[in-house]
Length: 458
Image (cartoon, rainbow, N blue to C red; front, side, top):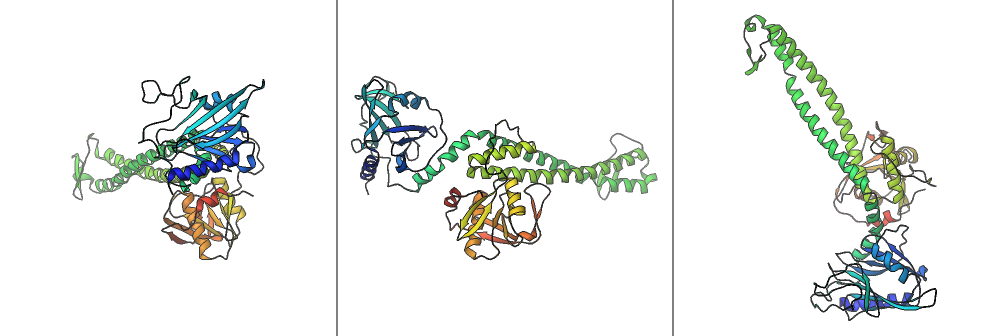
């Protein structure tokens, strides 16, 4: 189907739905995504997206509870809110959608406004006019450009054929549907960007410290040989008493400070003891730091699936653990923060956590001993539990894909064990597996994201 013909039919459909209704709300979702809600709200609303990949105008039934600031819409809201939508049209068989409004003021003055939405890739714009005179625009362009867009100038349609008809390539596809579904995620990602930065910074810091401590441990391991140097010199004291270089098993050791031999022997034993202690401390530090790093990496990879309440709960958890200071005022919620999420697949409940407290509660409070626990093999990720002891291979595959997807992986091995073989680790959310199998996923069969969108907590 010709893209412009499709767009014309699409806009015609929107016109049929919203013509002669009133514009009730304008929501600024992101810096390039806007939602227009009309008096026929039960039919949905219109999303206008100026994204650079594929800008679009689309009907949606998504409801967003957030609203950002945008100076352009702040300026035009008084002119358009509560205005009657006269029509939605495609202009000149081009990628330009025109919303025509009639605004009646409190003093019964009437104004005809047109809102032009230009859906040109890398050259999008929204322009408000009155009697073809530009009042305002998201992107103003000066008189030195080929097509000036300035207040109090006449609005001119583009004449560059290269620009025309290049954007709306096909009918509504998965890109547009996925994009609309991801708008809230983008908003939350921006709102809580400080959390992502804090996690990345802490992970980087831990990685650097682990690397440094590992080098210190390597040096300490090499110093363990000084025990044998001390033993050798003590055994062969007389023949080495008056020299400062000692050849032992083909290797030369130098008493560079010219200490008496008995003092140099004591120094060798001290070096050995210090090395042994350093190795012990380093091993403990590396193990704890790797566990800490794995926990933070698991949180970081899960952020893309977070809702606002998950961010708030994570701030509380990280504040409690001493990673960050939570300055946000948290309202009391109906659902406790430790409650995990659930999806239903083939009439079987499958649970998963988004943070340590949810993982811990899911595995050790909610799950029965004969249920099954899943986790990405030898990597960080959330707990997944199949709430059944008797299920088919499809459910096992779905749960395995869910564990991988929540860990930001598309292929890999998934650990699979009965709950009775899963024991608590030293920290919340950590586990020790006594007996398990692994299940390998090479290609996803299921649309995991569509299930995550409908995940519930109860």
